[in-house]
Image (cartoon, rainbow, N blue to C red; front, side, top):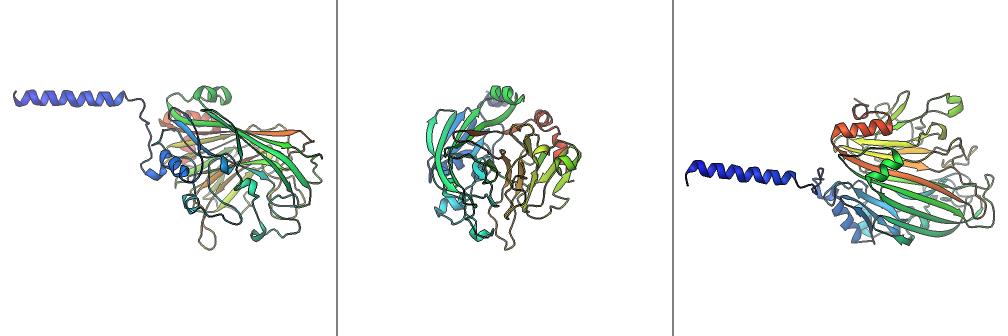
Length: 412
C-alpha cells in the first residue's frame, strides 16, 4: 500500500469521526469548564451532607433539599457537566456548623416570610431594638426540615405547620406548603408564551402556599405576613439584571426604583431609563433595589454575557393590590408600603468579610389578610436559558422587552 493511499484512508477515518461527533445530540452544547461550577459536582457535594431530591427531564435537572424548606439549591440545562446555576455556600455546608442568626446555605429559590423588620416582624422579639445582634431567622425558615408530602420524577411537594408570635405579640398559627414542578418546553410555551426551540433551558414553577390555621382573622392592625421568595445566583463581572417597569406619575405609583436599602447606589451600577432598570450584579459591591407594587410588571431577568446565560423570573402580579409588607428595621409609620420585587448584589462588608459572592432576584406576595382556613398562594417561574445568541436575544426581547446588546452594554 503506497503513501498516497494511506493518506486518503486516514482522511476518510477522520472525516467519519467528525461526522459521528455532530450526530451526538445527547452531548450538552454548553459545559462548565470549572468542575466546581458543574451541576453534577454540586449535586454530589450536597448529597454528602443532606438528603437531595433530584427532578430531571433529559439534560434539565433540579436539586432540592427538604431539610432546608424544600429549596431549589441549584439547577442545570446541560446535564451533569452543565453549569450549576444556583449559588451554594460550600464552606458553611461542609463545616456542618450551626450559626446563630442565620445559616446561609445558598440556593437559587428559597421560601421565607415577611416582614423582616418593623412592629410586625417575625425576626425580632418584642421590645428588642432593631440591630443585627437581635435579628434571628426562625428555625422553621432556617434549619427545621419540611415534610416531603409527594414526589414524582418532575415534581415534589413539601409542608410544615408553624406557630410563632410577631414583634407586637400577635400569635400566629399557619401552614406552609410549597410544590416545585420541573417544566418542559411545551409547558413553558403554554404558561409563559416563550419559544425555546434550538436552545438549552431549564425551567420550573413553584407554588407556595400560606394557610391561616389559627382561630383569629389576620388584620393589618395586628400584623400580616407575606410569602417572600429569594433566589441566589452565581455572579460574574458581566452579569446585569434587567427589570421592565410600568411608567406613570411618581406621585401615584411611587418611584421607579428604591435603592435606599443599604445606601444609594452609584450610577455605574444602577441605570434607570424610561422603561427599564439595569443593575450591575458582579458580587463586588453590596446594594439592593426594589420596585413598588404599581411599578412591578411581574418579570425580571439577568444576562451573564461571559457565560451566555439568560435567567428569567416570572411572578403574576395581583391587579390593583398595593399592600405589601415593609421590612425596614424600625418601627414604621407605613408598615404596608413595601416593595413587590427586589434584586440584591452581594459585596464586602466594612470589615472586609463577605457571605458570597452572589446576587439575588426576589419576589414577594401581597400582605396576607386571611380569615381562619383561608390561604394565600404565591406562584413563581424560574428559567435559565443558553444557546445561540440570536435565538437567546429573541427570548429576551419577548420576556423583558429589551435585547441582549442593550443589557450587556448598559454600563459601557
